[in-house]
Image (cartoon, rainbow over all chains, first blue to last red; front, top):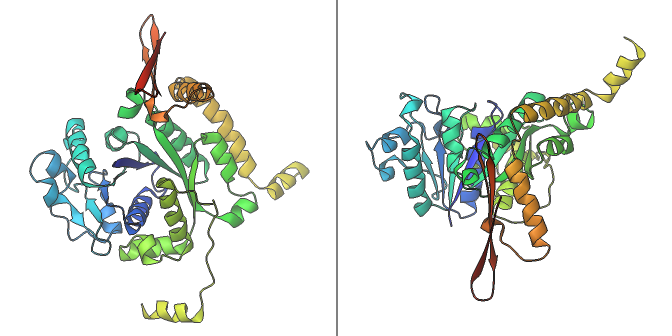
Length: 271
Length: 92
């Protein structure tokens, strides 16, 4: 049965879009059919991170308003064929998104895909409320930093009260994903410890993504990090997180960067 | 720099961040209302029932309606039986 997953955080810049792209690609690489939806109307970026910015013809709002069919708006990834994108509108107002329209599209996508991943905008306004509204599962992206943890706490409260599931009295499955993690700084006591963040937010841990230059490199070239550098530390962390989402038990580790050998260094120069 | 701040610097600033967050969030959760009371009740009810009967976590519904003078808590649990299903509903 299809699962609708929202990637949310409250705070901006913590890695929601990077996470949506990486988890979406990781699930698709594992053979699942996945659609990722950008809910950031007016400030779309998921298309850019996935390298599909020049292929967007119709977007979410066109489909909500009945100006395009869903099949016309879905953009299939050129590298992983089981991954599709539904872009946000760059020119329209976010008020054009109606709850009824979003509900209808998500119901339709549930029929076609194993995973429907909603990339929430920052904040707690309309866009983020609609991104989480029909979700079964939430991934709360948090940096080990005070303002991000505070905003995540607020978002967890909203997931437990404002989603369709919460209103029906059903369980909203929530997972914490810690991003931009730096083990050396945690060790020196300069960065909130994972166990402290977990104790404060008290939702289960899905994964710890280490800070890495590979994340920026992947977005520079428009490819999810799990595809662009599958052996890098952040990619391995995302691939493990995707397995946990599918119910596999994977030991929780913080992957570290392997020392690059001469061959891979030469290869990178050439690339 | 006095001795205290010297040690604090050596220990790192993360414990200060944790303490500040714990105080702040305890306050904010109280102000914003018992944010996940229903979620907590749900987990605990499930744990209690699960000690005696096997229940599917998706078959438990806990719903709270807050009214002006009276609030109701509705608990709806489906317990599987050999024949098919027994529904247990508690309202209060």
